[in-house]
Image (cartoon, rainbow, N blue to C red; front, side):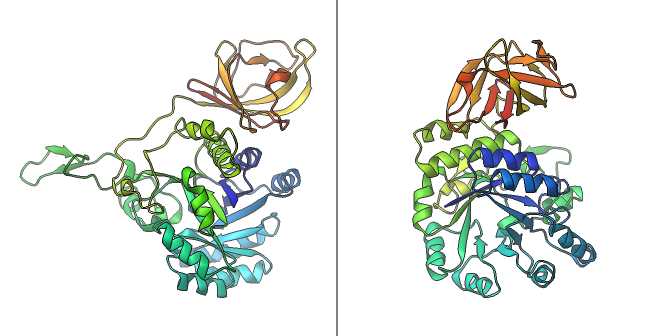
Length: 409
């Protein structure tokens, strides 16, 4: 199966591919359901990425609910996509088929999960319309998924296997718009369902009763997070061709950890259990196996989210030079938060190795050791030879409340 990872930015796309994704997906600005995730596409950057990873595939999402007022700018958006090395577009609105075919006649089309494809007859119809892949609705069970795969063997089936889920059917929620003026269906969800709520009884104004979950009552809003890492073999056997990780608006750390965990699981790598554990170190709500595996916990909304004890610190860039005093290599360092020389860190390599308790060797532009590195100031990191992964790539540097994602070669 293809492993498809989220890429809200070019930086996250590179990290996803470095950590094992076969393909990445990013939104088309102005037409994506993650309006806050996507900067304008960098055509040169994406072409360089495709050159660096020639076997990778890149998908663009036009999956928001398109209103009449949006159509005036659609043509320009599609024309801009001609400059990008996209392998497919993910669509949810059938009204966009004709404009897309007119401007991008050779573009492969994937049906978004927002289109709510829940049965084989719908899948056949979409296949006849020219969709080569269908991202099934998340409300289906594994037997239903198998039936659809068997019924449409010429259409690839894609399935979400990890990440946030919505309290509404396939994301069709109006709670955010009602409470904040930000429409979830236009890619600007405020995640109002995650907030804490209380009830006021009409005869006791000002007396608030919290909405909680207990033995014989239930909170009704916030859903759990999906995790199907342990069910990939069954999903593959059902006929699914691509498994997808949610999270274009989440951190580069999230992208790296989830991608590496699912890559290890798909490959049956010895580090599979090690990286499964890493899924519990990133921010998440209680996990569920969802409707796919008929997990009853999918009906039990979450009241709390796990906050990671780690923090994103920066990104290690390309090799600048050999280190004369240490025998290692000096890398550029993009600092996100202050990094200190005296804070022990772990190193999570893309090949699956995890090394622990290493002190970061920070340098300035002259190669002189410095006590810390801060955002906005040029910084460099010397890595010793023993920290090099078997595939020749460096990985994530992690500390308590500190993460550094390393992408240099």
